Length: 174
Image (cartoon, rainbow, N blue to C red):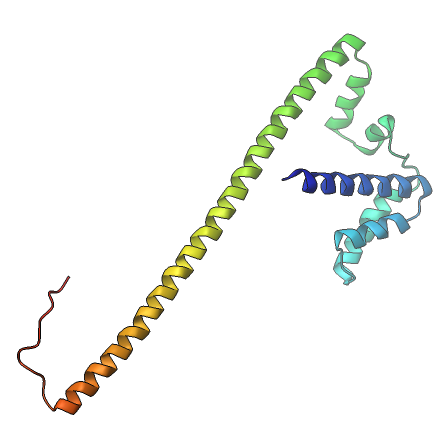
């Protein structure tokens, strides 16, 4: 992903986050409808039904707006317990865990970038292979048309002569 695409992705992610935050605070779906349009969510009943379920969950009363404590209120189960444990850590432990998480995030991002670049290279290789295959196909078709024309010319000559000459040069089979 080049820097221009990455910037566009970041802008889109920020816009989505802002739309969700605004919708949660106001309990109004309008920002989410704008987000749905940007995401290309259609107007057919299945798409709209799924989108409305998402909007209802995001905007339902009692859900706090996004913030450090709201995440633990939204998430239930083991993750909520993990978040509660983090809230009770000392500054030193929190700092150490944050550094580890940053290192892990950097490694994952580098790995993700490597996979993305490998995918892009494979895609370019496929496009190149398809272009080579097409060039070979066109060359084969050109040769077949030339051979058909040569066969037609030979048939005309033999018909005009009335026989196949016996002293015609012979070609060895490959």
